[in-house]
Length: 158
Ligand code: RP5
Image (cartoon, rainbow, N blue to C red; front, side):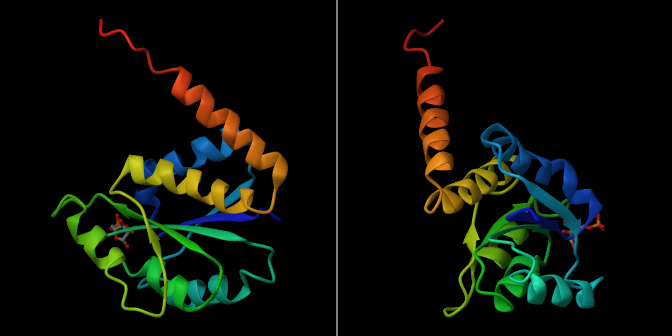
């Protein structure tokens, strides 16, 4: 069973959320993906979040747009870290998604990333970093990944 599970409120979130898979693929971290909507499939959300620990999930990545209560609701039902991605919305460019995800009242934590593709990518990276705390092999891969990124930035302006 994969330790990382990526949930999203709608199939329409996938073009954004697929960016979360890039660093996970690069680092050899397995993941699963599901559409779980807080308001369209609330029972599916309850089932997912309450069984996450028994299913061996160690990090949840949750992306949603608009009045985006999916990450917070998932976090309310499990202690497993939830890394959230505010998906860019049609009406308000994702500001609605960001504010509704990031403004968690105290007592339930959600690790909110940036709006859109960069946030999704960093959510994958953050999930790997969380797992790396107790996985030396993954930690070394992350260090190499970061070094390669640093070395890929040229000093010269062309
Ligand atoms: C949210 O509503 C989803 O996360 C998505 O970002 C947004 C729009 O969903 P669709 O109407 O495209 O299914 O629940």
